[in-house]
Length: 197
Image (cartoon, rainbow, N blue to C red; front, side):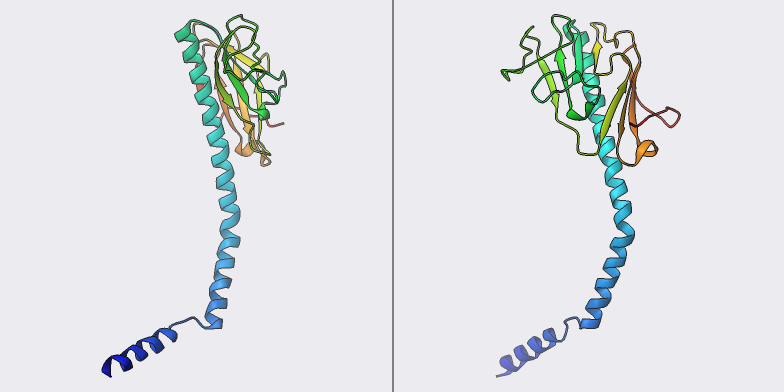
């Protein structure tokens, strides 16, 4: 008998430990206030992290292209990506980019048969970057604006290039890369001018 009464007391004690409606409303109000204060800061942080990750991905692709050009003793090109696996010829890089071995020197690649090789010169397709997230832009300064080529020495084919990632917040949070004509790649700093479209 002692066991039954003890179990009943434990059950009733647990039932009394719930939250009252007032306590629940206060907790909900505090959570709402916290979300209202933290929400914009979290969105800002996530936006910054997205731009940093994209900037780092492009830096990695540029480094790889430069290294492959020097290693293979063949030019390697980055170009804006078309709807299919081809260079688009557009100066907006939001559609992504291709990195490919340029065997015939025409700075162009189309991989219509999807075999990771350029159809006209059999150059290897080294990397395909998918389209950027909606609202993010990428522009390149330097000639030509829709592609860039690393020579067999790893240089950037006689021109300096600047890549700028932006979103709706504009230049104040833009991220970028500076590519010297020697092939040296560096992150844009606070003294570098980054222009958003």
